[in-house]
Length: 313
Image 1 (spheres, rainbow, N blue to C red):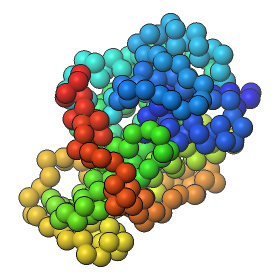
Image 2 (tube, rainbow, N blue to C red; image 1 turned 180 degrees about the vertical axis):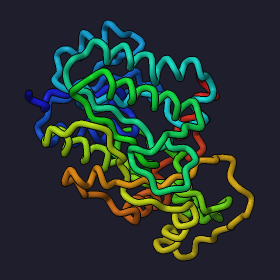
Image 3 (cartoon, helix red, strand yellow; image 1 turned 90 degrees about the vertical axis):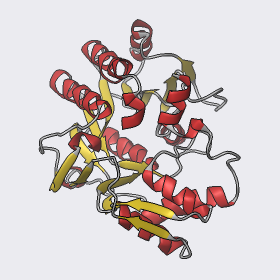
């Protein structure tokens, strides 16, 4: 099957923006399907369909003209999904489940390492999930339904994203490394609560690079996708290496986010894929973005999923 005819559902978002450009630059036929939840317009010169995943029959009809569907559409983040759990379940699970039952060609799905929740071991894909939020629960349900009911697919459990994707889509300023880097650029003190919580980090562009590799090598299955595990304290230290005058306030008060997990990438590396962007590149590009004042109002709710949805949902 030709995997170069792709529909990216949710392709106007943080991951999808770069993915769209990268695949087109590599001679793929790409169309973006997106409802522009966080956008006021979409002027990128690429094939585009404004659509909602709840318009199920329409989406299925469109998807039949493509060999691959990359499903990025979701409400993302613990806080954002907690605002309306019923809507979260509909968007993150029910719509996808309906689609999986009816679309018989290749599906690429992005889940999250948040399904591991609180787990003190170094864990692989066979570890028992321990979701601590509606977000993690619905993504786990969706990935498991896909795995159990569709033969031609692969799923990435994504680490905590950071960095800049394309230069068109909104950047997310509700992700830990992006937030800390932004504060460093503004010469603010970095507040680190506890600091010993582990997170697997992943540059946003690496989602696209791995997706292309898997498509071209016809790989299927479930895979952790992250570059390296860091504690929150180590993230602050990485920022200090790039911006040495950055001050860090370490507090023994534990952060309310109870997640703590380190993941193994052995299954992924076993496929032959091992190309990741270094964390210093991601930190540097965020700091540069703000030092050059390319965003007028970093506090605009649009840059935070939870702040935006609390205001407009």
